[in-house]
Amino acid sequence: MVDRRPRGLTPAELSPRPVAPRPCPLPYDLTWDDLAPALPGFGTADGARAWESYERRGLHKGSNSRILTLRYTDVVGESRDTTVFVTRAGGEQAGASGLGGVEAVVGEGARYEYLAGHGVPTPRLLAAPRGGAVVVLEFLPTVGIEPAEAGDLLSLIARVNAVDRPPLRLFEAGSGLPQARFDALVEAALCRLADDHRTTPPVEVDRWMRAYRLAAGQVATCPTALNHGELGFQQVGWSGAGDARTLVVFDLETMAIRPRFTDIATVLGSLAALTGLSEPDLFAEYLGALREFTGQHLDEARAWAELRTVRVVVAFESLPWLAEVAGHPDVPDAPGSAAVSLYDDLRATDLLPAALTAPPVPPA
Image (cartoon, rainbow, N blue to C red):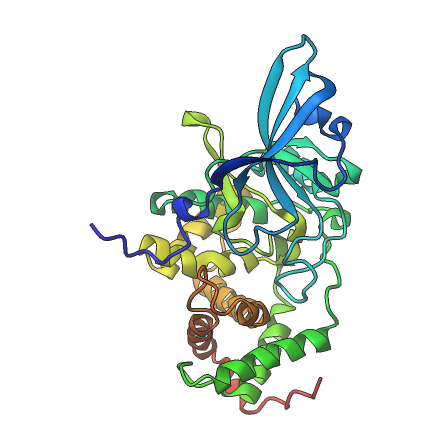
């Protein structure tokens, strides 16, 4: 049978790829003493060695994370090997504005500790040197979900959203770019789409920018909750085995208090493509999971309208990044496919008709 699922969505395409072990120094100026809490029975750094043993996959596998196999001598003189995931602050997507990428304002280590203590499944935090600016996590061999595991992801998103009164000191979004500068990037991306004859439907830059401003104003009044902020299938993986196997969330640098439907809005389209299920049905399942965790009974029609407006803003704010990665094999249809989905949401939310009478967008 031919697998007709879109590319880049399955664990086979997202999970770390084994590579021939490459000896390497410890990254990010780490020492073996920094890593000692992550090494069971660590005895001495004498003769200790590190190898890069896997590569992360996807667009953001760059210089701010490593998967290392570490060999060391334990307290009884035996040689041990362990594989860990090491990441540092300053990820490739940090520093943008809006609902998407933002600068982290605290170390990730504190976020892992807080979430684990409040019932949110995350990889085991093994060490957090440098005040948590570098974190050492358990290695997750499997990243992403299969279609039958969609409910696990919906439940995980709901569990994150259900965290009660997360502390602002840990989960405040950074300032990112000045809004006017970021809006100029959005407008530039729209201009590129408008100039591309392959883009369907045609992009009316001024009208779409007015719609973006209208949507952003509406979303600014939406209820908030804890959200990952850059959630994709490559930010979840499986910890444990058998009955103890649990879907966990990682890459927490962008996790912050945001409009409550930010994460579900971000992944819903991809989840529908992966499973073949409808977006409304998946959203209803998410609302059911949220109700289990919070006791809230949300009006489904109103929640759906809110989600689509949030998704409009998320989509607009992803356009500068999508324009940068246009042509990358992992996102062969970007940003054109995003424009099609955005147009559907703009029409469904009546933002395009409203944009005709909205004030013009001032020049950046």
